[in-house]
Amino acid sequence: MATTIRRYVETDTGHRVPNHKSKCRHMHGHRYRFEAEIEGDVVDVGGVSEEGMLIDFSDVSKILNEYVHDIIDHAFVVYDKDTVLLELFEKLPPDHRIVRVPFIPTAENLAKWAFEQVAPHIKTAYGNDLRLVAMHVRETPKSWASWRE
Image 1 (cartoon, rainbow, N blue to C red):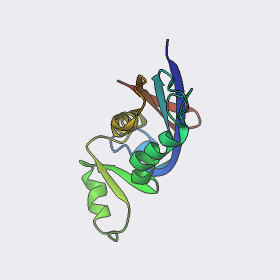
Image 2 (image 1 turned 60 degrees about the horizontal axis):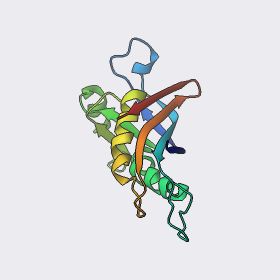
Image 3 (image 1 turned 30 degrees about the horizontal axis):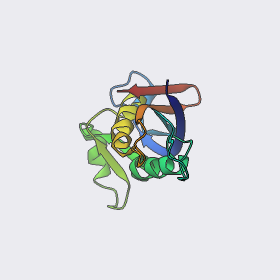
Image 4 (image 1 turned 180 degrees about the horizontal axis):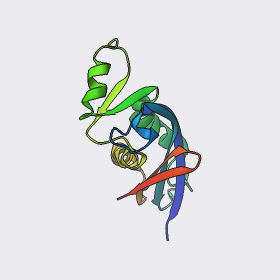
């Protein structure tokens, strides 16, 4: 058996789903919650800071902040084939935060993207088995998507 922990970070991020049949085709934003689910064995090395933990929660926060939050918080995520928005965004000042991605920025695709950003950085210095098993993305209070490898 393995232990599981979760830690999350929230972002305020804009997007649109260009071919959506309803209102999501319009530019809008969400208060996203990116929640990392990590599984493994607790550290059994005596006397170290992480003894009894999978990984320090603060270390997970640093990873989530660097590889998710700091990239898309207060930014607009745009599909790199959304020519309408890309042409519009060319007129904005260069300091405007636009993140181009090779996928339509749905919650499902953002969950996979965040998993791929975070997974390589979930590691331990103590030899305990440890891995990111899922990234859960809350787009609205009633809507979640998850990516599992």
